[in-house]
Image 1 (tube, rainbow, N blue to C red):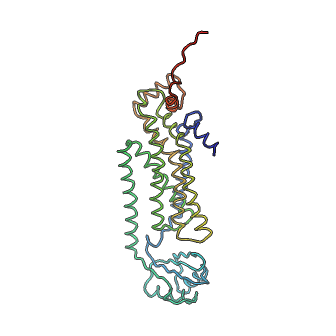
Image 2: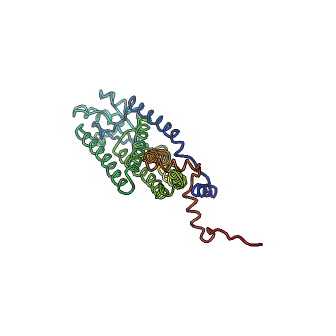
Image 3: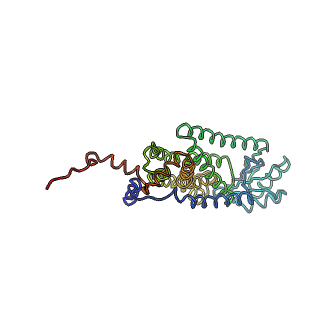
Length: 348
């Protein structure tokens, strides 16, 4: 830990620097491949929407002999053989989801399930969700997503600047698209808990990005007048200065979420937790990646197109100034007090 702290100190002071902004094409290529893979997965496999979104019938059976194979056999006996999702929850529960059924079909399924598991029909928890209700849930979920993005853009534009808002939203869309693609690849069911997880990771991704952007703003304040470094150099320094903090924050956040996903949902069979925990786990990881490797490089590219920043880059380049951490040096020297003053020549 002391070694990590030492690395963080050198990164903050500019003694060690990782060129995140300069190597942005590498990060863009990695993200491009992930986005392409997500798009292909969504096109070929699609999302497994839960019953809350597409409508249908749900049956929950609690029995000591609960098993997926027995539920499949019961559905086959009832003549329901298409678009069925069967999940075992814990040791003694089976959840069966089917397409929308008529009253007669629903009664047949309940009878066959009760006979197969040796329970009473009244003990089977049945739920019917119509297509119109599912469309309403989908519409509200989309409203919540777009409303969140709009409010965040408005806040970032007022608190920082418009280009920072654009870069942050691009990184958020990047995170959501990759998370959705992984969801489609794994085949997990998309439920309202998944939507909640998506909104949560949006907030976390923006939190990490705002921390980095706040340091970028601090490092680039009055940069055009000082002429000590380019905007990209100062922005890259900000990423290095917040790198250890982002890593530690993400690690601490991933540990409990990973416990929920791998221990709770995987080992203990708490199936109701896996939808939320998977979205959180993937989103936290991609959010940290995007705030470091995507958001700041995009911001630097947008700002370097400004005439003032282009003129600054020419002035810095004409001096052959390769210093990548001028702000850190100034801040370090500013805290030295009297030792900043030049030494007087001593007569021997």
